[in-house]
Length: 268
Image 1 (cartoon, one colour):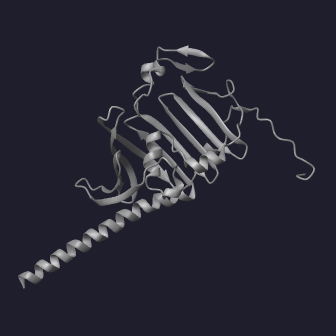
Image 2: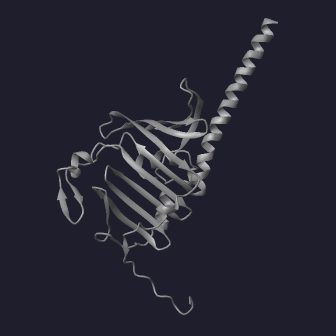
Image 3: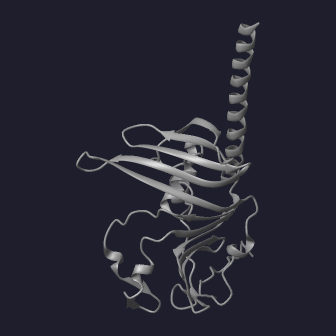
């Protein structure tokens, strides 16, 4: 009888582990499908912003060709606040710190790049010039080859990790599911991992069915062959299946100077 109980207990534990894994994978599948279908609103904070590549950001270009260095310390080593909205081919990405945000809006007219600057409660936009933007042709081939961007480079990598390989750029490593479970604080998680010389472990945290955080640890060999480690923590404030339409149009106060192509007789 004791042997039977032990076998039964082991079987129940195994089934519980299997059920847990199935639930966690289903949680992540929901968000994977949103990314594949390209209909979502994502708002997040990159708590551990990417390392600086150069020291050129010791000064920053703000506004009408004015070099300002007094506030640069407020723009460096700060958590990156990001918004990404997609409704099929229409996309919006916003990334920045404090009162300075870089924005990219893509719609049927093309792609707009502009900076949003808040000063004492007043918002101004800088594109072609102050409060003026011009749409550039969207390089659809490049986006198809490189995959979608999700604001910061870190978030782009961490979300692309759960997508099928055919939706990623050629230089993106393959990631695979390795584990899932529950934590003592009530959160559940799913673990992914990349293989190869440069390895990364990613953990997606859920509160019930809601994705609330992503954390990763990278181990990369530098030019000298030395192993370097870096961590990344993303706090998810919103990841919903409803595109926030207000982000997919130019803000009030921006003048568009895009020249419209004249219709041919065949098009009219």
